[in-house]
Length: 113
Length: 112
Image: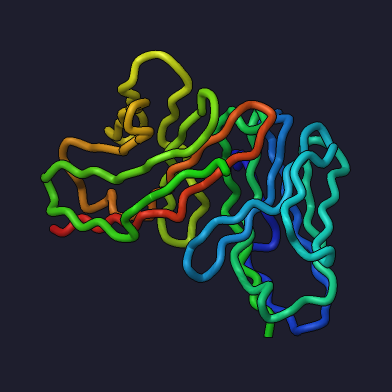
């Protein structure tokens, strides 16, 4: 069974479009995260949710909006996509915010043309 | 500011030789420290963590890391490198209820 899953795995879209990435974890963890990994492999946290509540919201454009319908799901919606949004987006989860090891999904490679 | 640093972008080591991937931290209080590995086109995988106790922590795939409080370091080590260890390695730190910080990553290449 996949612990942290993301869909889709690849996403190619044009500038100005709106897209969503879905994430689900079946580990029973309380905290979920979204990360962006750029072409240089730098990993940047974007958001963190604990029991469906936002606890970390790094400096990201407000075109990015996370939504957590329940503690097993954390989706990422992106409005008005820009070329600079092209990256790999990873979802992760942990039992404890900050102090526990995180389990990562396989990533979603977003390409904006 | 709290952070972790990985001073080497790239580490090359011959197969069978010991390997070390360096990490230093700047976190107030008692940090939780982690190592993750990322294989090409995959998500990060947890290798090991230090919370408290013995300074030498053993993890997956024969890796271990040594916590050194005086040098604020948490270097990843393996006694004998395998070609299959070639990957991107991330050091990270966090504290319960606080943000998680990742280093910039070190690309390890094990040469046959």
